[in-house]
Length: 249
Image 1 (cartoon, rainbow, N blue to C red):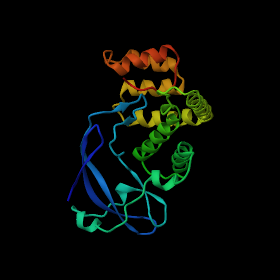
Image 2: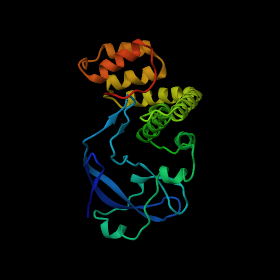
Image 3: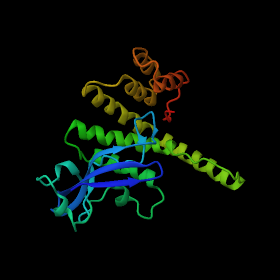
């Protein structure tokens, strides 16, 4: 049994495959899904590899609805092919969005703390899982700058001042996490290179965001993607010694 969903004004089609997971901590059974395929007609892409395209994130970490503890979803899937009937009536496995932030205002900071906590606790048992957590931690810190408030008509002074104050506060918060992000990027770069077939543009951007502009420039100079939009934008920011995340457009 598979589920087709059609969502949003930008119209994408998602193919989901129902699965059943068993919590490794308390044994509770939950329903979940695997993302099989999708079509995207609109996407916002950023220099750190994050895309906002309306497609559900490839969830690797789930939250048990009973004991509220995180677990790796793929390690908890029950054997068997079609879980459609078995999943009927079971509670849906949680994720970090609904687990951490009910009625909370500081969601961005809690997201950072969530991934940092998993890494500090040794939640991962493979390079792939560690890279997943470190990438999400990187994105979570960058979200402080990524989703800046913008003012749109009508240009009311109060709304503009609120947006300015919000953006300044988020920039200060970002700088307070700067050292954490740099240490996280060092380890992530090691894992990325160790995994082989590293994309030179993506690797150069990691060094740029870490603040090592000389290394970033050396890597990008050897790239064969000089006609790529990302290449041109990356070169400009390396020359300006700009280490902040940016949208690719």
